[in-house]
Image 1 (cartoon, rainbow, N blue to C red):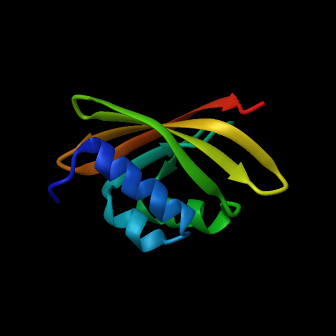
Image 2 (image 1 turned 120 degrees about the vertical axis):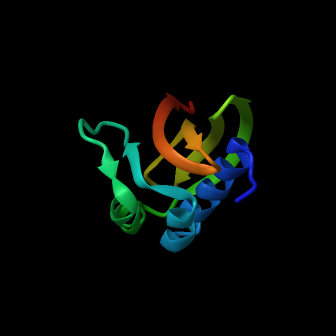
Length: 111
């Protein structure tokens, strides 16, 4: 896989929005860890990613900004779950060899 960390991050966000678990999993390491907002324990492994996507509400992502430092990518989106919430989400991806090993989120109110 010959993608920059930002490209991998954007592809992952697109897969989440499309609810395409297999596309998201293909971008991750086998031992990926995702710390979801409000969770104390990360989702682990490719099966954890599949479950996260299955359980996620329908999300609409609008890209706002992206930056890359070494193997870390920070991609900020306006995230909307129609009728439920809207916020600015910064997806912080830690990558290795073109795959996501760690993901955490920073949230900020949109209003």
